[in-house]
Amino acid sequence: MFKESDHASRGTKTAVDSDRMVSSSPPFVPRQAVSLNINGKRHDLSLEPRTTLLDALREVIGLTGTKKGCDRGQCGACTVRVDGQRINACLTLAIMQEGKIIQTVEGLAQGEDLHPLQAAFIEHDAFQCGYCTPGQLCSAAAMLDEHQAGAASAVTPDVRTAQPALSDEEIRERMSGNLCRCGAYPNIVAAIRQVAGNKA
Ligand code: FES
Ligand code: FES
Image (tube, rainbow, N blue to C red):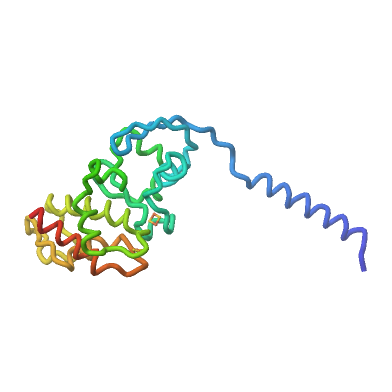
């Protein structure tokens, strides 16, 4: 049976819930001026400090070549280069990249000339839907530079080797942060191997 006290307690509960809702809404954070150097061009932006580099690239600047897959550092679709290093753009804040040199997939080609990796991916049919491809390309470009600099990987037999041979196993390990849901891995490895061979 409905009692007066029920009504009172329900009313109290509603008031408490709405208080919680108000208090749990995110605090207002003023936007901040941020200047980013992307593919050789300066972008002066006004961003909330919590904006990821990925969202700044895609939603604010309009560079949609960099893809959002998982948004939590697990798929590699958002890979870009910052000061030459490959990073997941979904795991870093845009304001942290001020003063650094950012390269996205849009910055790989030189005018009409494709980057050698882009040409090799086409030649080897190294994509199906293409969603992972921008991240694969940026990651591979940085990976080849890492290899040239003598970096070892988890499968390098002897880490004291100055520059381990870039076997298929090495390529697969070094590219393991970039997932391809279409399973184009054999062709991706073939494309990278070709470019690595040309570089050697
Ligand atoms: S979207 Fe960044 S790692 Fe998946
Ligand atoms: S080509 Fe479709 S996810 Fe890699």
